[in-house]
Each structure stands twice: as structure tokens, then as C-alpha cells.
Length: 379
Image 1: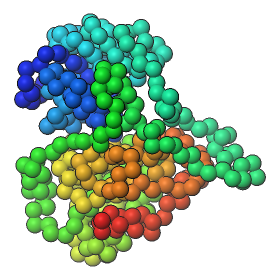
Image 2 (image 1 turned 60 degrees about the horizontal axis):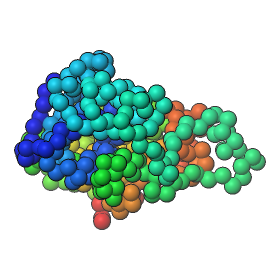
Image 3 (image 1 turned 90 degrees about the vertical axis):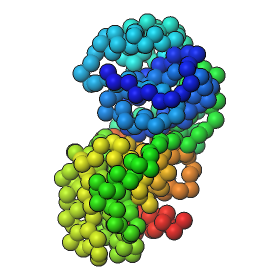
Image 4 (image 1 turned 180 degrees about the vertical axis):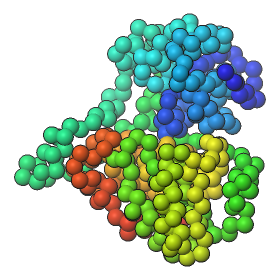
């Protein structure tokens, strides 16, 4: 296990934060971690994180060091390594039984997390869920058919939620159990100027004077979160004609085929500069540097969307099966971002695949997305 240490003053308390397992969720925990640092300025805060997310936390002021674990490790193996840290307090962000079991097995004397079945016994303080919290429940096929059948539900409309329901509040509320402020902060990540300069050189962007736009067409959770690829292509072509931009196609290794198709079809119609396809070719830190270089990111609702917003890059996001009110990137209501949705009454359904006609995403047009990106660029 590798530790990465920053230069905070010697601590008066050793705090272990058990981090979450997904990229977008990890970004949404940053306001709570910043509030935790504010509450315990002299503490040594160690973040236990999946190894794939380790580099996300480089340079982050809320964290002194990271400890990584792999998917192959059992809770018992992780706990054995945690014992050496002699932690005073465990702050458990995930809601899983395993995350609470790990800190209990490690013998950490004070263990705080949300109250959930099969794990409360492992915690010394189980925090009750906020009254404003919303459970993201998957809709059944029968419910979806009823909502989309006009004779049955003639006035059905898309479900919306208040700002107070956003997931950011869940993590902040948990931090408030330790005396931290629950007031909203924007999610924040940090990338250095030397990292940005290195990315410019490595990815051939040093001589680029055209506006740089990012295109992130994948979504790991499933196809229900993906705006149709044909619409990404049409939008990329239109925006290049109107802005003379250079597109950076981004994503993971699983997005390689999708990215290659977009590269070929946009290149065929490129007015000046063909797109640069970096999908599956970047480390997490390099992806962060490239996102910081972008004037805007056109993307599905996925992890890099949250990363971009936390770095200060405006995002344009078509939302289908998920809710921007609950898990949208950045600070709720941030005017820099454009979070687009249709009026499909079955949305959000939280399913991996659409069981009917994908009307939530098909209801978001190329013209609407194009204008949203242009609006971001002009503002």
C-alpha cells in the first residue's frame, strides 16, 4: 500500500475516511471532506480509496494521504493493514455493510456512518438519514408503461426534486455529525499548471490556438445514460463549422470503439482541424489536465462529467435515466453548466437499459444541445 503525504502540520488526531467506489460519487464527497478539514484543521486525514481513484486526490487540501485497496482484497485484508494506522476515528462515506465491517475489524474506536441494514452494529454512531433525502428507486416496466400511456396518465410529467435533495447534502449531513458545517460548497479538484503544460506537450496541443472542446460520449453504468452517438456526431460537426474548434474525444478503454467511430465521422466533415481521439489513452491525472484545458465538455452523465465541473470546466449534459437534481455535476444551480432533460414522464427511471423507446434521450435534440454549447462559450 502506497501513501501520498502532503505538508499539513503535525496532527492532533488521526482520522480515516472510508471513500466511495465510483468516480462521480467520489467528486461529490469533496465538499464534505473540505468541511471535515475545516472542522479538524490539525488532524491527519487519511482517505481509504479504491486504487483506481487514488490519483484523484493528489493535491487535494482535505487529504493528507491516501491508502489504496484493490477489488481483490477482502475486508479482513484491508482491516489488517488499517490497524497499523492507529486511527482515532473512522468516517464511513459508503452505505455498504462491507465499508463498516472494515473499520470495525481494524479496531478503530470511533466509527461514524449512515444507519443501514446489516451494518449498524459495526458503527459506534449510526446517523439517521435526512428527511429531505430521496431514494433513487428503479422503476418497473409496468410503472413505465403506465406513465407513458396517455389514457392511463394523461397529465404525467417528468419527476423533479428540490435542490435540497442533491447527493452533496447527504455527505455534508454525515460530516455535520462530527460538528462540521453542512453548508454547501462546490465540489473541487485540483490540477497543477505543470501537469497542464505536460499534457499540452504529450497530446500535441501546444500549437493549438483554436478553442478546445471536450467530447465524452461513454457512460459506464449503461446505455440508458448515453445520448445517441449519431447525435454526438451531428453536434460535433455543427459546432466545428460554427466555432472552428478542435475536439478532444475522451473516455476510458471501454469507449475506444465508440470514440473511433466519432473520430472517423467527424474527421470526414472537419472544416479545418480533425478531432483528437484520446479515449483510453490517458491516466486519470492526464484526463484531469485535458479537461482543464477545455472551454466546455459535451458529455453524458458519468464520472468525468463531475471531474470537469469540479475543475471549473463548464459541462453540457443530456440527462435521461438519471436526475440532474439529485446527482448533477457541480454546485446545484451553477449557471456555468447546462443540464438538459426531456419531458419524458418515465424519467428518471435509474435503469441501465431503456425497456421502451428511449424517449428521454431521443427527446433532447441536436439543435438544443448545439445551442447550449454555444451559449456556454459565449458566456
